[in-house]
Structure formats: structure tokens, C-alpha cells
Image 1 (cartoon, rainbow, N blue to C red):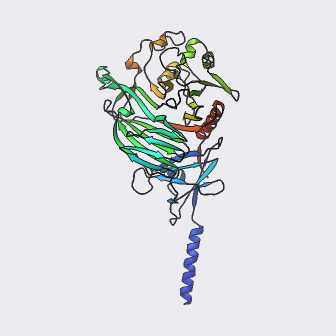
Image 2: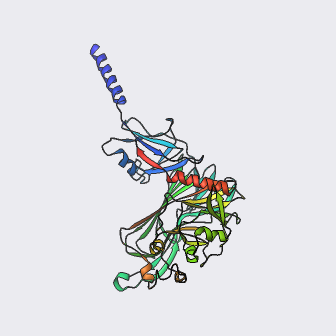
Image 3: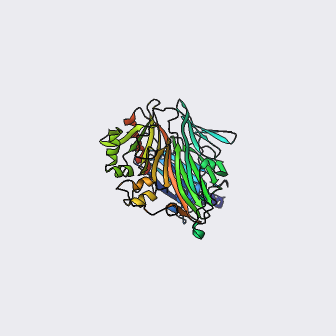
Length: 448
């Protein structure tokens, strides 16, 4: 009997010791909190594994998200490959303020925490209504997200978030005989759906993945990964991959009808462009260009461009309100009537090239047809030769010189936040957008 008691005591001690000596890895996620909104965060388990290390026997089911006071925060795991277990391609998602800790243990007795979902999903005829208490997003049959309700406002609020505009030359044999083939152009809605998944709703977000192919440009595939967060932020990662040689003239990501359908008195707001070809052609600064059009508003001693969102604003040439301008940190349309902002936010500040040819041949912004457009636009207008500042830069070039040449294995990725927020006036909207952008662009993940 004495030996039995000793054995039980020894086992108990060993179990307690095992528990006490269970190890944890802690990864800190932080931002510069500027608004009262929670900040969305998503990371793949492949990236988490790189931080945690391969020599740590992590039980990924033990994962916890804790705020600065040690309180558990809701989180969710998106089973991307749908194999029923956590894999490298799966996503971890949560929202937080200021900072949060991702904690993972080697204690294999721990399991995932469960939380109530913040969304419901209604499917009808291949489309999905993703419903949150504050808004509704409709996901169409090509995987594109569309805000159809925010608060008490219903209608076409902000459409086709992350849709692509693609143009190129079908059947190009340029490297064989110098011929480009037939010019073709479409948007994501004109592509063929190869796969569409709407993953289960969670306490934080709903994720959608769509794989689309362009039959007229064989070898070009668009993969859309869309995270609809309960904060009103829709994070879209657009990956364009190539399995064949393809000549491209346009490869732009877009969002359409930002509040202009429900309120044609909406205003367009953007920071002053760091570079603007039209102002250079006129020999003035971007500030002076917009000042002449009575489209400058000063907030906290900084100048912003503000004008009626459906007004072309007397463009120097072409029909776009602006084109060939630097991509800034954010832009938005604002409806004072409804107190709503529809915005596009970049996850990091873009590069602006001083060399004119490099600038034109790389990504820049358009605002045209009530659409936010960013990306590659390799059509060189004759108007560039009409002004001294840009004359001769592209002289002697033609379509074959302008096109962007992609080969098998190439990839291009655009990541954008398309969001709706509330504000009472343009000043409040600008302050919120500046703060929100700093929160998004200052996201950091480090191991403790």
C-alpha cells in the first residue's frame, strides 16, 4: 500500500512538473492607436511558424490572443485548405487596440477557444449576403464584395472591391515575329470562375477566396482573397499569376461607385499628390493645380484635395478627373448627407519615381467613371508630347515598347483596405482617415 501511495505521488509530481515547465512562445502585435476603432489583423500560419521556429513543439490549438491586461480576445482560424486541421496556408484573424499578444504553448492538453460568430451568411443563387449587426456585404458569383447596407443606409454603397481591369494582346507572338495579336480588355466579371469559397463566419471576419482565369489571355489567373472584418474594413489581396507568356497593357485593381449612387452630392477627398503629370505640364505644383479649381481644404495645417465626386474638375486632357498621379496613403468619397466615408487605404506608402519614364511605367492612380483605379497602365497618350515638361520622353516608342511582358512564374500582388466608416463632416473624415491609415501602416509583429 505504501508503494502504491508513493507511485501516485510520483505521477502527480511529474504531471505538475510537466505543467509548470510547459513552454510558451509570445508574439507581440502592435500599432500606433489613433482612433477609437479596433484594428484588424490577419496572418498566415506559415508566417507564424517562421517567427515561432521549427524547433519549438508548438500545439497550434493552444493559441490564445491576449490584450495588454492579459484578457483573452476573440480570434478565428480560417481553414483555407479545408483539411480540418491547422495548416501553413490557414489564416489567424483578430482585432485589437494598441497591442495584443499571440501566445502558443507546447502543452498538448490545450484546445482552441470557441467564440460566437459576429456574422451570418445567407446564400441565394450563387451569391452570399454577409450580415453583421452594423452592415451587410454582398459577395457576388465572382467573389467580389459589395457594401449594400451600412447602419440605416441601404443601396449600392461601395461596389466590386478589388475587381481588376485587365487589358493586353491575345495570342501575342512578339518574340517570334514581333506581332502583338488582338487587343482585349475586360474586368474581373468577364473572367471565368475556377473556384469560389466563402468560409464559415467567425467572431472577427468572413473570408472569401476566388480563383478566376482570363481565357483571352491564357496563363493569366487572378486569385482574390477577401477578409470582411466586423470593423467595416474589407482587406483584399489580389494575386495575379502567370503560367505563360502574356503581354499586358493594363493591370489595375479597382473599387466602384463609392457612395456616388446613393448620394450624388458626395465629395472626393485625397491628400495632395506628391507627383502629378498634368501640373508638371502646366509648370505648377499639384497644390496650385487644385487651388485653381477651388478644391483645397486645410485641416490641421495640411492641405487636402476636396471636390464633388461626380465632377470631372476640368481635366487638362482625357476624361478622367485625374490620372498619372502618385498613389497616396488613402483616398475616399464622403457623404455628408449620410455621414459615411467609403475609402481605399494602402498598407504602406508607395514609391514615387523621379524619372518620368519609370513613374509612368509603374503603378499610379486614376479616378475615372466613379472608380478608384490603381496599378499598371501602359498606354502612352500623345498628349505627353504636347507639353515641354514631358515632350520627347516617349518619342519613337510604340505599343510593343510600352507593354509589360510577363513570363511563366511571374506574380504581381496588390493589397488594399476598402472600408466604410462614419463621420459628420469633411474635417472629421480627414482626421479619421489619417489616423486609421497610421494604425494600418504601423502594424508590427515581433517575437517577445
